[in-house]
Image 1 (cartoon, rainbow, N blue to C red):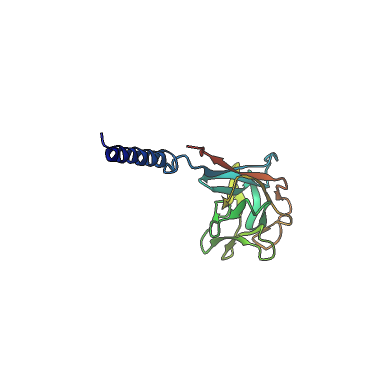
Image 2: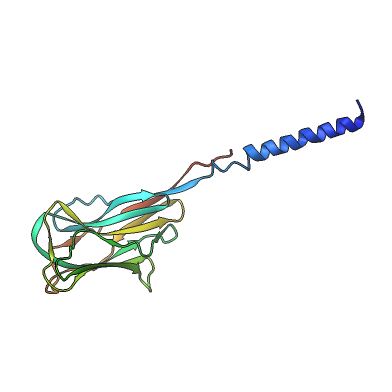
Length: 203
């Protein structure tokens, strides 16, 4: 057997080995780590007229939280909600702009509309300023059942770790005459959003 044949054969074996290593090692993306997120509500007991953050859904890096008011109570005449949600660590969690969706706590009757907005405070981006209100005059709403959703808000985890999510101080609820409803209270305890990585590994 000639030395030329041996050299070509050796080169072929080496090339095959390199290609196989690339395919099974660096070329395989199915084992890359993925980031997910979830929200756990505070341990505050639910009572009528309490507003609290509760988990609604999660998928990928996104988690949707709903602000709900507990009932039943048919004497409230709710017309507007104004409050803020505090993100404990902006390095771990961002608010998804445009994600605010009004729930059923405020319902539009003839001549009314319901508007829900949420955006980061200009001076403090960790505060998400939320407003859910009716327009057009007329009566406000009660809570005929065990709870009613005020608004849904979506947040995005940017890395693994945990951060608090809570309702900030000085929230207000007003009735159809523009007067505050002092008997409605807001949860002051923290919920927790956790970003978790899964998968990954050397192969």
